Length: 228
Length: 297
Image 1: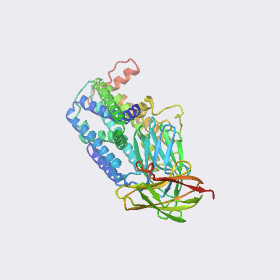
Image 2: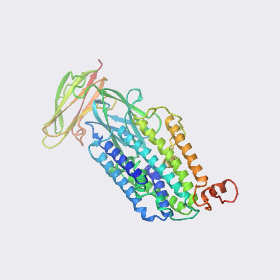
Image 3: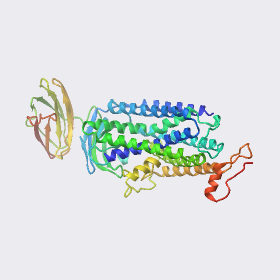
Image 4: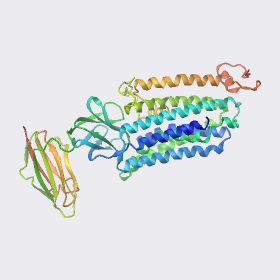
């Protein structure tokens, strides 16, 4: 009894560790950047396709913080606690279609500073794109966006082809409220990438390459989304 | 840097105290030869936690928050089981000892090396994964600043120093007082750990009632202050516990403390009728100034 109890318990704990260890899953294909300060919670992008989403939180405030993703009725979808000032942590959640609140809680208490994000229907066919636009990214500018405009509520698929020889390019769209709507991430020379975006608000949208100084060199432009 | 220091301190405090008491127990019962068992347990827990944390931080796998909370919850319950078992085991051993500063206890009464290693390992490993993830994120941040990791490590070292101080204090008091005070302290710590474990399981959705808050003093109580850190690190005090947490805390603390004190006060049923049982005596001495000799019949 004296020695069997701890041995059995040790076996139980080892089993538990193994079981839990094997439930780890891969990091998400979608990535959301959360910048948490003592008084703000910046989230980009705020519109995403559904699926495994990794939230990368950077604490730029002075207090320890935690970040929660709430679904309907404040159901906790995912969270990460104990993010010390000046550090980053990430967590991955499987999100289905719907709207969610990302809540930053400096001091790890209260309801938090909340930002809403919208996840569209399914991962493969997101709100059926009504039209497609082919964009070519080169050093340093875009072809194919000239004269582009849309109406609020429209869903457009953008395909970026990088025709440069040895530099990666992106296509990132920012909405009239200043938050990133979505993007085609760093794409290798000769490769393509797509993103499907729904323009829910009217206003002026900006597209640019977020890599290095490409935007300053000319990989940048605007288009207007008119009211429906 | 101070904030990260407080987190490091908080994470390390409880484990440092439990390990400090375990080491004191071995030293006082003349069983220093078993000390390696404790260090093996501590080393294993630290190593596994850091490794697991590194995989989650630098690798491409992630662990759902439910899995993390479930892990923390079950580990906390395991820790409470071990610590409680250990407290009562030590109390049984105390009965057979006189009011000496140090002394050998019956070999049959000694805590086996496996029990020591596992208890130390669970005390350290219980919050080990969470602490490891916190440390790795601080190390990652050294690209921009070394302040977070410096603060965190200083916090952990301070916890170790405090654990060492507890050990020094414990080693200097007589046997009876040692078992009584450390036992009572560990019971309060264990109650906090159990409540915390229940909270984790509620967050994981395994137990219901996560939004059923018993009280909320977070409007004035700052958990991230120095006093909040000490209360959380030692007693797992929460500013907004759930009803189930509070119920469990009392449901554990009250019966276990009563059982413990009763065992400490009552004369041990010893086969030698002339034995002076000092732990009952010291408790009585504290209550009323009567002669300490209690003869067991």
